[in-house]
Image (spheres, rainbow, N blue to C red):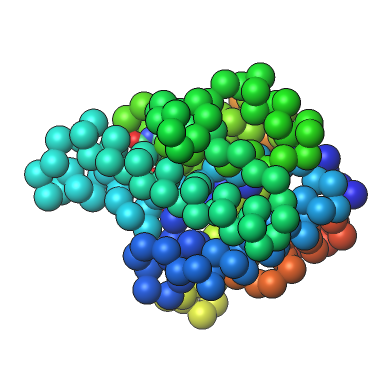
Length: 236
Ligand code: UDP
């Protein structure tokens, strides 16, 4: 086993399925099966979930919504995603799961307390970090880098719909070339869009490698985390 503890970042789009909005429970089922496979093999998992399938703060600003207000709306979207993932992980896959939210809402989830998160993780529970950092002007990618550092994750796995980082958009250019490895600095200099600059910097400062994987491919998490296969792109 390559890693003992990882932080998995799931964007809202991964949960939305082909329609790109809301929740597609077939997509969530597939995602949770993959998570359950690696959790059952003993990998400790912290999960940061995005909210772009419901609301992105910056886009709402273009419609005239005030930025902080828009960002709080975005963070609430991540909580809906977290609850959906918890339900499917626990009831369909038998994986004990806790949602910890950075914005307090005690009726639905525990408040985020780092030491409590660590305890859950050590007991083999999947911990879902909801509501981002709890502060506007941040992203859930930055949250992922932050929580990865806080829980001592050995790797941040960024789950996407593309099988790694390319030198140009592989959907637009047929001659796009995939990187197997990339340094943090070149990811920053090339303005790689897979994660924002703040999250690359935070990972760089704390020496946390980032693996960009296509999670739509069944078994890709297992292949990377358990079998140690060189799939995706590693930024380190
Ligand atoms: N957000 C925020 N602070 C955070 C994390 C998220 O304000 O710490 C807001 C922000 O408006 C963002 C939205 O929540 O657009 C949803 O998160 P994100 O866009 O990162 O989701 P993803 O693209 O990963 O689905």
